[in-house]
Length: 381
Image 1: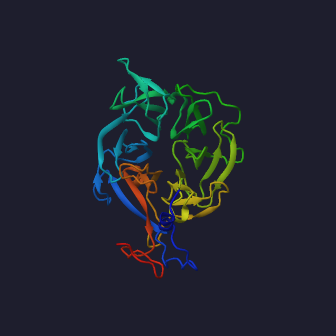
Image 2: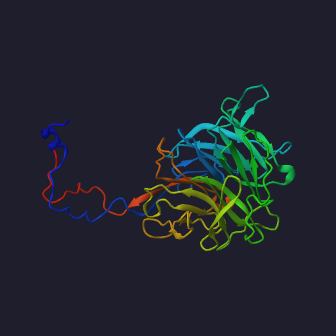
Image 3: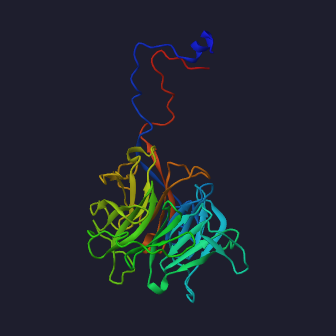
């Protein structure tokens, strides 16, 4: 039991009234500062140059390591820390059999399970740690113990004309599953932990109220639900058609049952990037963040009601616009990748260039102020 003297030291003396809070609250965000970390060429305002980073698209984090970016323009994946320092590993992405051009990766996920095992010709095998989808209709899987330099062909859906634009990994209660957004065929393909295509229930991942001409553009697993973005198809059903209000977002369960419409038209413009903001992301804390490929803006929605909360802005109050915006993901807390920092990928100049960067909250109050003290409070020496 604490002595009276110790107890007195442990508990501060009672005050008649609590003094008012300091006039400025530095925890409130005054916009978001964009920092361009890596670009494929000089002249884009980035701190580092990596020629592999062309049309940087998918983005995923090793929970205990650096970020992985899928480069749609070079058929590779490259790795960076939170300051944009490139790591030595460069991974080539598989193509369908007989295809000579490089892979065209889009979405990717980290796999922390023991499923999704791949094997090499030499006989070595192991769980894939990163899995990619491509616009050529391929699922490609990478394991460091199988082939460190290549993500190997795991599924070939090219005979069905699949054009995969996004990928999610989630557990349906029985096993981990992969969910691939096939933009060309306007469907979500589902694969089990052995890369076997699953037969889905009638009506799975369908929304009868969706207007004709829209198709799944991306899919992400966030806070126990699968979020699917939709964009308008071009006549060949290969690429999106951007435009103000051209987009929808739905939430599904792991079996493809429609839970609710999250957002319709409005601020959406070919939405692709999705991330759930943490509790310390300023005015948009705990909101669903949606990145528009069509106009490069990022919008915040209440995830349960779909109410639009606003768009991210720069510290000067101007709209934050990132040309060719693709992936959004918050850091993992290691390798200079803070949990409250939003990392992004982009393919500016009609997807002919590449950019990887980060968005950090900007405090509203002046910096380097002395610690605020209540009236009469002493500073400990």
